[in-house]
Image (cartoon, rainbow, N blue to C red; front, side):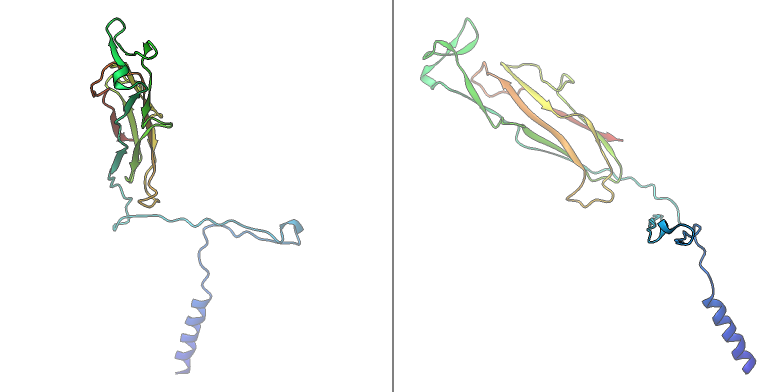
Length: 199
């Protein structure tokens, strides 16, 4: 019985004396060799490896991107009242009879920085995005005296991994119009195409 107890005690002591396998050699703070090392600091990174149930690298990619925009309907308001506006057939402009000159006015909903288009990436991979008018440019062709412009660079967005839904990577563009309309009718200036692709 005493022999059995002695064996069990030896096993327990051996277990307590097991030294873990360290990934790197220890860093020593020894004031005898170099007083400047004590007191000291040592940075130790904590890393996480993520694997699937079989211990393999996860390769699944899901793309989920939203494009949101403010109203791109702009209103031009002439300074002159209706009774003082006439059509000038020689210049193809609306004319202000009170000033005997081309009618002037101001745009509504066209303040800086413009109306927003926002691209948000909720994917677990990066994406690229572009914006263009039908002429493949950032400025539309002039129509009825009006030009629309896209402000902002085509770019990329990183993966949404490591972020919350509300803080997902996003960026985008601003849209403004300029000019003086040469028609009294409502019209579409152009169409913007937002293209999304993997990056």
